Each structure stands twice: as structure tokens, then as C-alpha cells.
Length: 155
Length: 155
Image 1 (cartoon, each protein chain N blue to C red):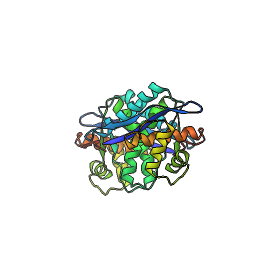
Image 2 (tube, rainbow over the protein chains, first blue to last red; image 1 turned 120 degrees about the horizontal axis):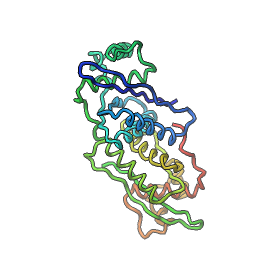
Image 3 (cartoon, rainbow over the protein chains, first blue to last red; image 1 turned 90 degrees about the horizontal axis):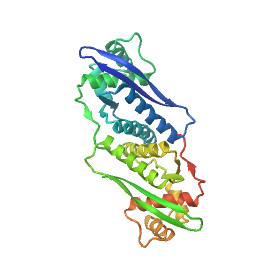
Image 4 (cartoon, each protein chain N blue to C red; image 1 turned 135 degrees about the vertical axis):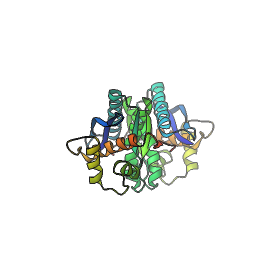
């Protein structure tokens, strides 16, 4: 099952508010073209629904094997095209930047990040599943960084 | 400079006819979102112009490093979304299958493939650049294979 988490966070100046979060999932027997189209359409629907000022992605880390990297690249390409087609600026942050921004500590573990996401976004529980919590952390990181993050660059 | 070759070939039963070929290029300083959107739009324009029965891609080989694989995956994802969104069936062939189909010999070199593409498509010269010739070879392979190639699968 391919999963891509998302989180929509509103910056209210002195507080943050979650508008939406979740995961885009596709059934395991879905073929690549339909899967990528589903990711593209789902991302476009979210953008149209919330009209965000910007979108942020977690920067890919290159310690994956090439097969995994291509699968991630496919899905990411579909989501990026949806954002770019609708004129949404894209930023990206490394996992280290996300941890530093959300927890204040680059070596924070997943549990610490999730607890801080819960706290900062004033949620009753840690958001589930993990991919959605991760996406919210990237959104918080982007707001904290006041868009100082690296704009999705030339690659 | 990111380059993606394409070739449009018509199957006339007992002969093949080239309708178009070339490369989708993006300037080196273009940022990823705009680059992927350009690939998406260019692929969609080609599909709308020629209404092909199917599209075929060269299967990715996994001996690349992860960074290269992600870059290829991004571009491929953008093109796949364009095809899928317009209802075009996608097939993929390994370089070995393309060589076997076009030259009849899986270990054929680039030069042999290009000469056979020129011959089979009744062209005066070897198509340029190489990426366009490669794309035409994949198209010829697909027609030769009578769509017996692996439909772009689940990954």
C-alpha cells in the first residue's frame, strides 16, 4: 500500500491551527499510472479546497536504494506537478531541519516529534497515522522557518 | 539540462511511419516544480496532438545511484500522470527487450539500434539527438511486440 501523508496548517500569527491531515492511499494492486494519477488528483483536490500559500515537502534522503528512490520519485513527481500546475510555491526541508524546527533538537526521535506536533497544534492526541504526523511536522517546520527553507531547487 | 526523448510512430500494418520525434528540454536553471510541470504539459500536448493508442516507456534500470533515480523518477512521474490523466495505456520495456525487438540481438550497441531505427522507419538519417532515437526505438519495440510488453505495473 503506497501512502503519502499530508497536513494542512493555518498560521494565525501567535498560534497554529490544523485544518486537515491524513494520508493519500492507493490499493496495493493498483497499477503505477492510476496510482500516480490518484496522487496527483488528491493533491490537486487538497490545494483547491484549502488554497494554501505554499506547500512543503520533506527532502529526500539519498541513502535509499535506487528502486525505492524511483518509487518515491514517481509519487513525488505527481504531487509536485499538482502543486506547480496550481501555482503553489514548493519548499523542502530535510528531516534534520524538521526536527530542529519542531523539537529544537536535530536528533529528536519520532516520538518526540509527534508529541511536539500534538502540543504545538493543540491536538488531543498524536495524529495518526505516522505519515500524517510527519506531514504536519513539515508544515509546522515551514511556518516556523517563515519560508526561509530552501525553495524546491534545481534537480 | 534535463532531457526526455519522445517518438510518435504509426503502425500501418506492413510499414511504420514516423509522425514526430524530438526531446522535451528544460533550461538548467529551471526549478524542479516548473521543470516537472513543463514535462507534464509537453507530454499532454503530444498526446492531445497525436491521440496515440498507447504509450511506452523504457523500464528503469536500478543500477543508478539513488540521487539519479529520484531525478529520473520525478520526471517519469510527471510524464506518467499526463498519460494516465488522458486515458492512455502505458507499457514499459527493458533496454534488452528494445534491442532484441529492434535489432534482434539483446547485446546490440547504440549504433546498431540507431541504424535499425533509421531503416525500419524509412528515415534518411539517424534521428537526433540520441534520446529521440532511443524513444523511437521504444515505440518500434512496442509495435513489434504487439502490445505483449509488460503493462506498467504495480510500483
